[in-house]
Length: 356
Image (cartoon, rainbow, N blue to C red; front, side, top):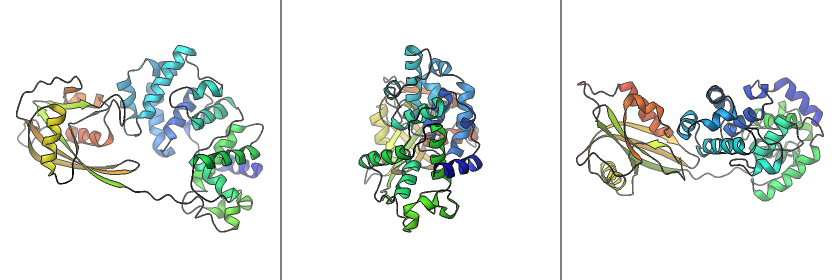
């Protein structure tokens, strides 16, 4: 099976930029970006990242805000924070070098079992198998194991992978397994007739490839949020999210979730009072933005607003920023779309006055 998989991988593997290097830093960056993100989406971010942070030392010297801004649009911003924190730790403790031991890597921020195994096998050639969603699916189908992904099942899957893991070129084997899951052994409509290891697959023999693993039922929650676009001449009011939790450290426009029974404008007035300790006059709806997270679909309503009270704020996380300077701040995807809208509008209404 290893021979068949190896032959297939040499012919069909995608020419991805991170496959052109053995640099542990670059491989680490690519693997973090590839978590929960497709390879095609990662490529431009990977190139931009290495252009700005070509080495771990460059990443460690950068500000957190610049790191988050570079990551903007990839989502799951904790990944970027972990990259930055781990780079600083490695530069302090290991002369800006990625350690080559499992124990040293797994102790660093963001280095779970998958990232650790990927870096050790691909960059250092160590015989450490990886388990990501693609490899899990391939192994479950090969072995005819029913059920859903779970920590208990992971132990069984790792034993299966170790039983066929090569003594040499473990990095290539890991990448071949992941590539097989990405291109052929897909979650839905797998291309079994094109699979190089079809004759070893119990799920195919039993006609169960479509139900292994058991599909997860996702409960997607619909959420409506409101934000205030508050202008002061050519400046706009933005606030920084807390340093911990969802989208930590990013900037956004004031606002929040609409509660049951509230009108959109009523929700926005309440949120501004709670967040800014200020009253606002809610004007016209500027735009509506839809975006999605893993378990949520969010509709964001952005309203033109005017402060009716003091324009000075006690909180340090609130800032007036000129339109041209907004692009220097890292925003969540929904707020980033609002920034682009304001930039396209030139920050001006039809009468030539600044929006807000």
